[in-house]
Image (cartoon, rainbow over all chains, first blue to last red):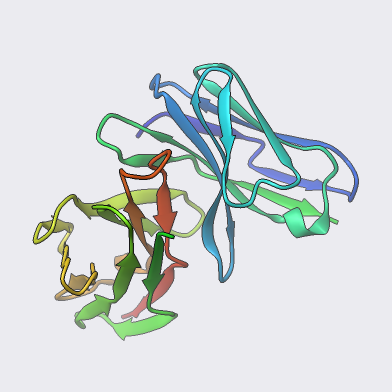
Length: 111
Length: 114
């Protein structure tokens, strides 16, 4: 258990509203990731961070931004949510072994 | 580019049946290979891994052997239980890549009936 907490765990919002998902870790891991999980697509990387204020895009970054002001927190923001962003979002971190540790997920529904 | 292809599900088995979930990969470097499992309502957790050719990863009765010649990492278990019902993801990390993140297959849902 890498001590990863995601919030909120469930959210329903309307198209066009901003949404921020938070990931908090207690393991002091350098790397943090945001994935989305959709049926038929598996997990796809949205953004990742390799240190405080160091972030980069993943495979499906359009419509998302991230920030990491502290080692333990990695925020994912949808500036203007769309129905195509309805998904389950997972935060993950990487330890020294290269293993990914996942949070329990945040289910977002955009109406 | 790097990719992972795993057999489509869902897979439905009776308890004590033999399980195989096929996984093949494409990679430019020398990847490490992983199997993750996701139980209902939870995040993914590492099931097993192998870091070089011919390595065998094993855990909880599951096994997978890293076959470089066939670019495969098939997951097997000799006798499945109802509690093994979950979604299984094959993944690779290519350390020659820019950030070394994991690339996942689409997942295979396993249902085990009593």
